[in-house]
Length: 179
Image 1 (cartoon, rainbow, N blue to C red):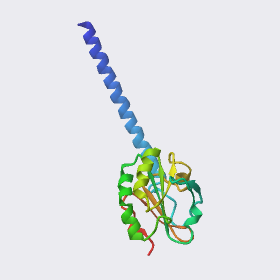
Image 2: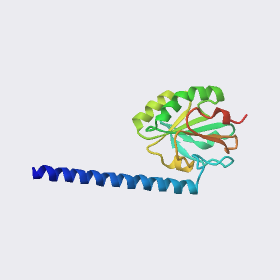
Image 3: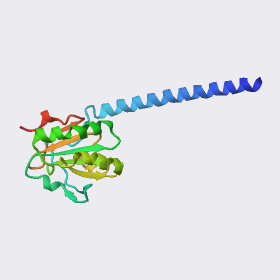
Image 4: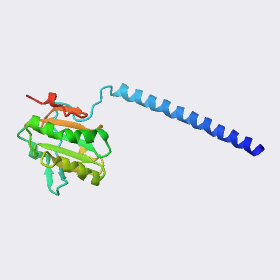
C-alpha cells in the first residue's frame, strides 16, 4: 500500500512539474512574440514594393536551369510555397484561375517549391503548363534572397524587375496586380 501512495505522489509531482514547465514555455513564447511585434509590427513576407528583385539561377523540377533574368521585359509572378504548408495545397489548386486572370504564361509565372522532393513533384504536376517550377530542398537561398518568412507568398514584378506587389496567403492577390 505504501508503494501505491508513493507512486501516486510521484505521478502527481511529475504532473505539477509538467504543468509548471508548460506555463513557463507559453509565457516565454508570448514574451518573444511581443518583442517581435515591437521590433517589426507589420512584418510581411517578401521584398518591399519598389525594390529590385534579386537575381538567381536554379534548377527546375523538369531538369532545366532557370535564370530570373528571363523575367525582365514584362510583368511576372514569383510564388513561394512549401510542401508542409496546408494553405499551399489550396494555393496550387487556385493557380489555373490566377494564370487565366493575369494572362501570364508559364514562362512569366515561377513557383519555388521548398521541402520534400516527392511531394514537390506532386505539386508541380498540378502546375504543369501553368508555371515554371523551381525546387529548393528546404526554404533556403532563393527564399532568403526574397525575404520569404511565410508561405504561400507571391511577388509581382514589372518589366524592369521591380516589385510592384507582394501577397502572403491563398487567392493569389488578383486585386494587387498592376493595371
